[in-house]
Image 1 (cartoon, rainbow, N blue to C red):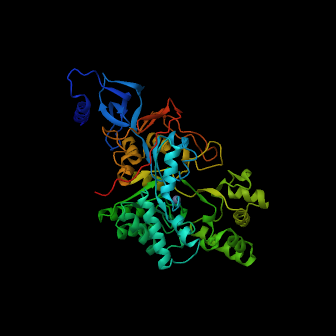
Image 2: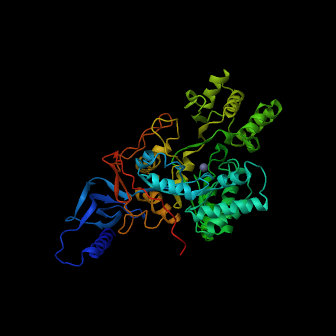
Image 3: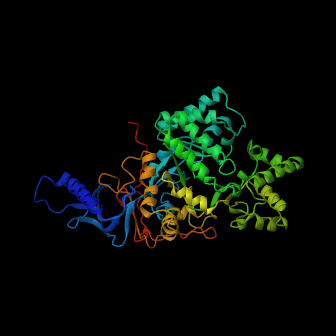
Length: 533
Ligand SMILES: [Zn+2]
């Protein structure tokens, strides 16, 4: 098995060396831009790791195998290290990467490509946004979806109703333009305002526009806990009727009462795939989620902007009703208060960052009762809301989802700035955590499978041509890591810590991490999906 694989690699090497240098039998040893020697290649296909050198020229991998006589402008000694394709993170909120082009939290965990515009939120003018990013220069490759919430808000504000024919036509034309301008698909965030007010028929119409343009449909589903199955069914149905690929975003079970429902969610994905619908999912490797504080309130409360929200919350009768609905929403999930909720970022009073709502209630209301927690949440909503971390998942579900072959690894993170706010640690640690905690420590999946989930699986689904494999002809996106040391360092308490054990990262053949330090290089490109064949 191994020797036939080596023979195959040798064949590839000879083949690729043969292209430019065949003119002369006595040509000097091949010279490359970068040569990564003595490493163990995990090629991203799911194949077992094999010893091999990797040569890069003009931004692309040009040879893989035994390259003992080759020379290069830069030689990286990867003895004892793994050489993998750069990680592709298809579920991010890196929409503001133009303002923080080094994207160090992603780069340092081995991510070389991100997809933004998820959960229904993106730039409205994709062409303008991509031009700005190209001009700014970025360290990693970038692609974006067009967000449903963005489009709906532009046309209908936060109205809680169906669109008129003319509004739907306007939304379709915005999605069409975004696709023409380079979006790779259409995303929804059906737990958020205003997407939560949209019915399936509206989503289907818009997803079909993206599908016709070769894009996929990515969904932060309507429900991720108590009604997980019907949410998965809705998502698959949209993809089936719109005839487009489907990406279920951050698949999880976020209600203790429904823990174990991942079995049924994954079997729905299997059944859909058996019918020929190209459904995949992604996940982050944590048992806590990150979202807005508003998501804990009934959707009707959030309609019409901050003034309308304040009016409802400040009306004693309405507040009594809201509070009782919030209690119902919690008890449906099998929980009785907000102690699972931790403040990530609360602008009006950053001293609350890092505290659970139980602690916040004690601080603000002098009591940590469930009632005081809801009152504290109301006070924070009145001051503009907060972003939160929610501890609601089980390790069993996370493991089961990770073992499914059609689930990729994605962080759900934005571009972070060292020291700012208390974000979810996944933004610094997700890929490294999979390799350290889930592969090395707990043996949940083998290393080559983890790498496949971070590379070729998402590359193929998003149609990023010639990315996601260590293979001649593919882009020079590479992550070099120490399998015995790679680990996440970011925690919920101290999230601002770069991942460990990733000494080299290359993007389009340019070194962006060297000996564990990020360089100033900005070799990232804007990625598009390859057109339908
Ligand atoms: Zn989301």
